[in-house]
Length: 414
Image 1 (cartoon, one colour):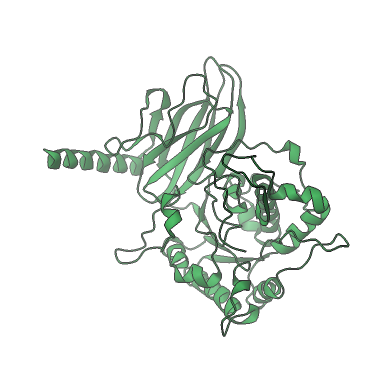
Image 2 (image 1 turned 90 degrees about the vertical axis):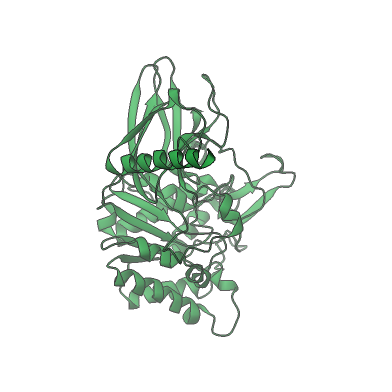
């Protein structure tokens, strides 16, 4: 009997996958129940929303790996709403969409969904903690947040084969941070692109260029990329800690970056080099200390030598920190007093990892860099035009509703 039930469930799921690949599947959230393996969709992780709930909630659909065009219908017949939409591990797509009573707004965006699989015999060597994150499972998960999230329907279909993919290779300053209050520019930048672009963020905390390659993350990117796609590469923070023979900015580090460039070009993709984000360490004169030594210079050297577009994120984040000064610049990073978050008895003071505000500002810096260095890709940007790192946004103007997942320990990496 159990075998029969499993076969029926498998048939249902295969039909479900096929329908998603061929045409849009629309879900009425008012009629939705909890997620199950048999149905392959439903409310997930936290309790389903009550009629007047202000709490965030999640909706998951089991789908094959790929890029998906997601259309959400936001609003309610009888209530006003303010809705934020994120996907997978807190990737931002829609920020604080206001709907009046009786008003409905449709928003469409592209979400990349993946598992560690590369081939039948190869996979990404994800870390133990990543197994609990939403980025690497077999579901596409949407997080609905905001002051009063109102969602009528969710439509999902396979994105067009010609969708431009932007692969992100990097460390904790790039990764989709799963837990509050940590954040990165990589999980904010999807909100800046139109529906012709899918951001595929393969970064992970603690990675160097060496370990990224060794864990098959570059191989995963190369297995998925096609002609005309982009591969953005930002390393340095963790590479600086490697002291074994043959290491160094102009030795193993630059050699590894050259591998990214060569592998991308071999597939017809466009490599883009990004210098590492600055650390918030001030000199007594109010200028930021250069903590990267030769490592950011090595990225610039390779970019010029190999004729690769360069985004100088070291320079832009340095400008941003210095513009805000020693105290106000703390808002860009994880600096919070004790008991700001659940079970956080000690203060958080981290001068490398971004707050959500800092991650969003840094994503704007990346967008500015794309406008200067990669104008063809910048044509697909819908936000951040005209941003100047010397004049960051006002912290009080940035609104971020917390996800329910929190971690007091800082991410891997220096």
